[in-house]
Image (cartoon, rainbow, N blue to C red; front, side):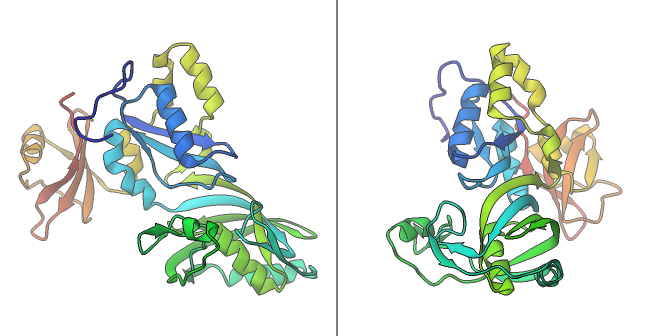
Length: 308
């Protein structure tokens, strides 16, 4: 919602983070709009799309939390996926047309050996069916028009890749990876290395650092709570600062809080050795993110609006 936009009637200011378990079959944006409507929230945004055929964690930031959504976008992700061996598709998942088929003759030892090759820092080429832009156009728009263009490889990192189950022509994997990793491409590359091809038949996002599925809510659960009263939904929200758990926390006094809000830099004793800090007032209120300058002083980087 742009600055000065008219607020929908009956909507309200909501601040916090909701961990939505997106169902299969709807886009991330559609899931966002449904959730925003359930909460009657003036402002909301999600932190990283999931394909319509994927399910799982979709963190949604409300109100002031949207200022800090970038930290969740940059966070590492965890997935549980099932890879179908012996076939490749036009999209890298079950939605596309089968474009090749090969016999599957691999064993567990071969799979373990191949998976080890994909742990660590890698270069990955984004799939054509992705939201990456090429000369201002989304790649998936070009793909739907039957066009394919050269894509530059991107640096990613696979922190862990665990084989959960292997059954004839299916691999079930747990993946912990950096932002920007395409699991469809990972599955295709694994299939190529195995010599039989592969595509993603199922995909669930199981975590966005620092969150896991235990705090996720489904749309149905949210609708049931809202039917009992809109205030019942507030218990589902995580505090804004929970997205910044990887940043060192620094408690600052009232005078420093006031100075930062006026855009001034401040000197604080015992400043942690970190480029960015999560700033908290003495009363426990989250203030925002501060940047540590070369001389040790702290400058405001992004602050909460505590006026409302």
